[in-house]
Image (cartoon, rainbow over all chains, first blue to last red; front, top):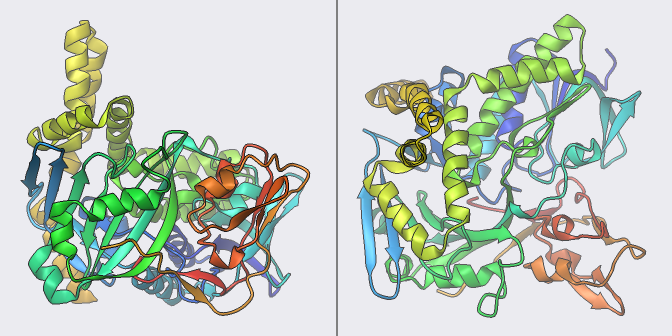
Length: 434
Length: 86
């Protein structure tokens, strides 16, 4: 192999990229990781909490060693309308449910891990184009005009990835396919965050603070990250709402949030897009799309980072198998890649739950959503709601197909639902090793 | 608390990573409507990304354009928007 030839090139050092590069290097492949920012994670606006239930998967245990901002143990949901404010406090499982993180710390740490495993890393390097030969993706061109070649390119460059777009796999998206999110980080200092937010995340549902999404506030060590937005269709803006900043302003003015951020200052503000549908095709000859580039994000449940970790790892494994077999075709890559994806209880479970819940919520008014949310909170969360929804539909329509589907899903999701004290033991072991 | 658009940038020239395809632009203004940073400005019959230095690199303009008139690429390595606490 010459200087610019690799087995694997990974584009993007967010969540999926370093996971892919680390795994590829561990599998003995000559790996290059390219990242456009100076410090990995500094181009990322969001991705605030890691789901502990996913980290229990042995493939992700090592992620528990990452720089953690706060161990989240509770959820508070506020339903607010003109007449009343309802607050639900939940502790959905024993111990830690989420780990809140800063992307500029997490991604930088993760990239170091990939480097330690043997991957070569180039920062401040933007991929501008792909190199195609006879319908296969053979390499990438960077902003300096340098060309790099690899047997397999793993695209981990996010929602608007230039690699996926140039390869014709990432389409334009809007309407009910894309959410425009605005995010602010409010600095309060560690002591005030401890007092006002503690180890709980907060959701708020109130008129004119969102458009079919869930405004949230997630505490980190010394800041609280607050996000809201809506689907990019003709109803996102109206006479009262001229931009997503207006949703944010209304959110910051809600009493329960307002009093908690009193005296703080906005330290940073950012925008990001979240794709809300599965991408049709994730591979081409010599190319695999991972993380948000591959549409592996569930905005409805706020899941994206762990999907990126998993798909990054699976892409590296699929690439290794394809290289070993000497078959870099889209079909072969897809078989290995999606085979692993389809076996993952967490990913399948969350996709199912999100699809079912989203279908009902997109068709409802804010007021009806508040009622649904109350049922969701009382009834044991979105998973139970998904099971219940299909079960009841089956009973009402006298269609055993729905009931059977609900039962199948109930059985399927059991390993996830049983996550409890075991996760804490693994977490403590990993933190000790750190 | 008032929403403040506090955005940090790396030093250095990004290059013209957002451009308009003048032939394709219909002047509908969706790019400007969905842009939170006022990058897009009306110039005669069409819109141009005149305030590119304020761009947050979200890509809403590219996604929303019905006429494929927005060319949305990437800033040069180590330039453009930079976020803390993300």
